[in-house]
Image (tube, rainbow, N blue to C red; front, side, top):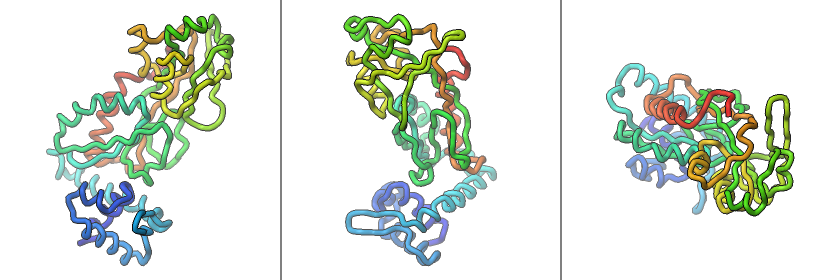
Length: 301
């Protein structure tokens, strides 16, 4: 047993919150995983996990060690990649955090990646809120909007264009707004992806409309918002790639196509190092490939 094996067990226990889950994932016995953690605790003279019969919680010292453990393991994997020891086969697990709408689209394409690399394993963690990559044990994540954390390394994938949409039945019931300033008179479905106000901004030539929608339903999931729009509840503002098919099929109506709604930058992020392990780089490259099909990097609507 060595410190490297122990560090690997440590980061996976931190990610899964379970010794037994790591045992199933790695094929290493649970007592061995426990000995790995005990070795690290003895080596550093501290407790890394607070254990009870029902839960396993990382201590403050465990949280302090975690980013350094990731860095050590990633540096070693990078060295292996550079030296060509694993060039012939992309293998191992990559954990990827994604927003709901894009995560579902990515998952629908994932079979192509796994067919190319049969020894690769991908775990997708889907949520629209942003978490800490290290604490969640994520190798990569996608982020919408500006990146505030200076510690993250970001690669721009494109921009998310947004469309205002409603169902034909909703418009038949409520009427079709003729100008954005009419929108407060209509029921609105708001994608509540963060705190604060969620005004709708529309631009046309030199004209600007900032709308405070009359919210009848809000959700922190874009899929829930889309379901509510399709259920004829009201008007919603959603990613273009999520609603384009519905518009083309006549299930949704796009409102104000001659007005521009500000785009949001879309990034893939990781914590480093810049030279990623081969398996992570492979997933990132596929993410770039998939993104190019549904995202734009221009200002047009």
